[in-house]
Amino acid sequence: MGSDNNVFLKSISKMFDDAVKILGVKRGLANQIKSCNSTHTIRFGVRLESGIKTFTGWRAVHSEHLEPVKGGIRYSPHIKTSEIEAMAALMTFKNAVIDVPFGGSKGGLKIDPKKYSEEELEKITRRFTEELVKRGLISPSLNVPAPDMGTGKREMAWIADEYKRLNPHDINAFACVTGKPENMGGVDGRTEATGRGIFYALNSFFNSIDVKKTKVKGPLKSQKIIVEGLGKVGYYAAAALRDHGCKIIGVIEHHHSFYNSKGLDVELIKKWLNESGDPKDYPNQKELKSREEVFSEETDIFIPAAREGTVTEENQSKLNTKIVCEGANGPLTSRADEELTKRGVLIIPDLYANAGGVAVSYFEWVRNLSHMRFGRMEKRRKEYENASLISIIENSTGSRVSTKSKDILKQGPTEIDLVRSGLEDMMAEAYENMSETWNDNDYPSLRTTAYIYSIKKLVESYKSIGI
Image (cartoon, rainbow, N blue to C red; front, side, top):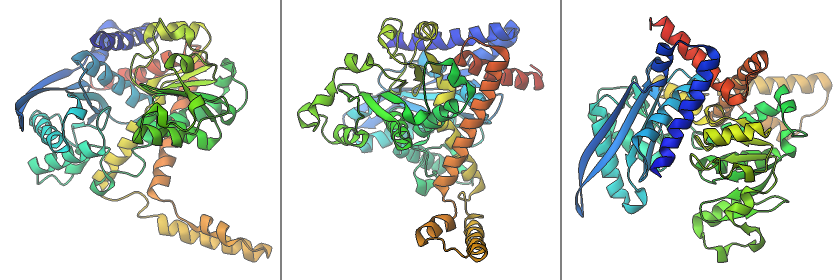
């Protein structure tokens, strides 16, 4: 597992070097942008029922050209410093690509959450938070974590509450983390954000001239899709794409995989994975396949949304797809990326494709600082405007608008409507900017373009502060 993490760091390093070479950035400035500003290793003891146990956690700060810095906290028994640093760097580039005003950071705790009770996990999380706060590594103005692999709303609630306990006079205390429960200032739509962002990324691509560079035919809704990993990211991406009209023909999971050329029932698979996971209980036995079978099936779009390094130099030749849209961070190694690009497979890179999570985290952070939910000021006004418009139409035309249509039209936007609208706008605008850069300069790939686009912004930021 450790070597995988090093491969991940090397892959990001190589992709960065390729972009810097094309841009002609001076070595000194390139080194400043590339290296992590600081990496903190934190060891702390927690008294559990079985005795005192020592845990190791990390928080890497890649770039503080904009503050606060932003990036998730991962709970996993396998993480290492190199992985945390690689993901912190990726966060900097990701934030720059979608124009979110944050630097990049990432954190992790070496722990298998399944081996601890909820009470023990809360105790460990609060202790970890205390250690991070002491070092200025959690703060609404300096460093704002979010959920990642192995963490979710529950852990973010514990972190926010612990920060508030340690800083009782900070009116913006709950802005210290994002991805919180709604009753603690979380926004409706944060859980689905990364997955839904993948849908918006693909939609933006299919609405651009760049589709001509691929072998795909027809609009997005006519495409067949295989998803690797039906967790938070893969599930919401699959659900949004299915609702758009796409066929999800394959799902690859850790122990079981599924395939149906006519389309799978994503809800059924998710329910089965959550409730049973026993192959004997799965209702459609013919759909159960091995990972290798589904991985090599012909598809239009392949979405690796499990973890880093699942598509390698060794197995990439088995992949039979026209587009890869990276749902996870670093699912393709740099060698796999090169080989697939040579074969004419178009890759929509992670630093753009899965940036939906940080986009909606930004909305949540802004909402926490403003202390007002989205739509509070304009919802009723919009309802009155729409009602007046319906009345004008009916009076002018003499026709009646149906009650059902009236109810839909009269409704003002809810928070989730506004969050989804903002997310779609950010993903669409970022793609338009990347596409323009790509087509104006004829860069070798969309990934290289995304890195160049983000590095240009970083170069300008560093120059403006005199570096």
